[in-house]
Length: 205
Image (cartoon, rainbow, N blue to C red):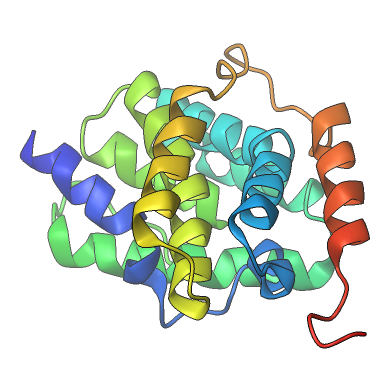
């Protein structure tokens, strides 16, 4: 249980607050209300987060022998070179934090991996199973951007917390073992279109 608690502490968005902002989170700068946040998080849940959950779970399932292969899979699914670089930078910071916790000489934690792969590597090192790794990735992918938005806006923290709980509870099942999905889906695209429609300056007449 201690190792699992450490993993959730590492997955907390505040742990990587000194790292570059995830490209998806940059889009959250256009969110002004709870419904906008809900649409944004739904887009993540059925879009990029499906990929991140699968990458984290597969990395934990395979172990060190699959770290580099999962990194290649993550890079291939990045929306852009900038998104890839940010993911690696954030993963590098996660791994640095992991080395502070686990200093096992029998296993060398890599210097850098894309963020979801790094999270899966740390889950494997902590002895977590694939289901725990999936839950970790789901929590990180919903809670971290939600609270980043909450800090920037005046949204009610209780309502944001309830939204995080509801989305985690209603999340779709993890992808089957050995499957890394594409980073888009009908609901993700619909949420993106609705959010784009809402992106009007609050100062516009």
